[in-house]
Length: 374
Ligand SMILES: [Mn+2]
Image (cartoon, rainbow, N blue to C red; front, side, top):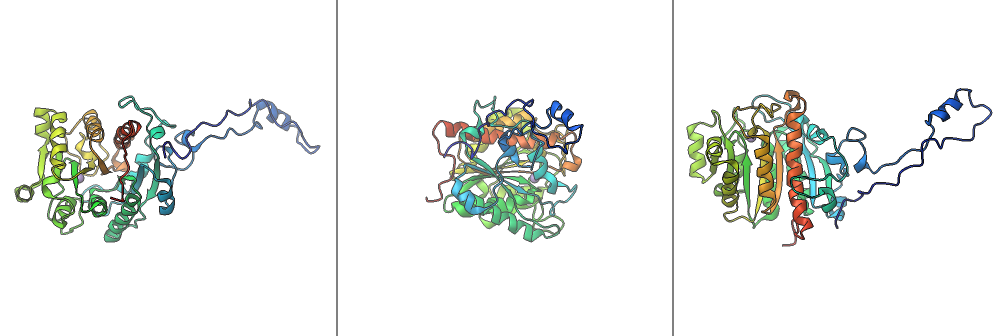
């Protein structure tokens, strides 16, 4: 199936001056002026995709909101957005539970969109839906991770490529576990954009901390250390003991200093080949704090000296234009700390760049969906 479930513009309504002609004897005298104003003209129904972005319920890019697993299965969507409004595992600033909604809202255009970068109308070429949120409850950390794992697994099992809007970074543990389990015995590699390694043994004693998900994924065997590739690390974390553990487990970490020296394109080219050293698809994990906090201030643990927005968006296109994408998460957007929606907009465009790059490939005849039958 190609195209959206419903993406066409409806026929324009008759001119507004065609107003109600018949008035009952009880019509008040001011009703005539209402008719003259044109207020009683017909509604102009529009496809939900084409409504102004601030009208009606919130979904990513005005996509159909489809929570039901059976309906998702029937649609055979290429891409499914999932919200993971979860921030029970943060160590510093909270607020990422509000991230999914803010990222969904951070777009002023509607319709099929047209990517100038990629040269495609993503929502014409692809079938994409918003599969709604994982139903997490505040203060229930393990339950929340379970809800996210089950939601991602249910959606990904339909073959749709999940794009998960966080949420703090701890959600990458359930996200990538769900997809690695489904695709087993084939392996996934991870390209992890972040200021921080998130590979600590724990965070203040919690194994579920947003500072530890990468270690959990490697310890469990969901992802091999050698296929876990990090981009953009900087600042004053982690400690040497954690760095040693990362090296011993084969993790490959490209620090921000390397991007400064070699340029992001060369570094990301290496990251792609390292992540695919064995696996056949990449999970992209994007912590928005990889971007400089001057550009992306709305995040929990900002670290100055990061990537430019344009470097990141180009890097995402670089990945999604050429390798199978198993899924993506976009995490650590904390709207209470954001300024003028800057951070939420970067997160929104990060998803759109990946979607557009995949759409371009589908337009050229490639299959984007995962084939669960293999
Ligand atoms: Mn992180």
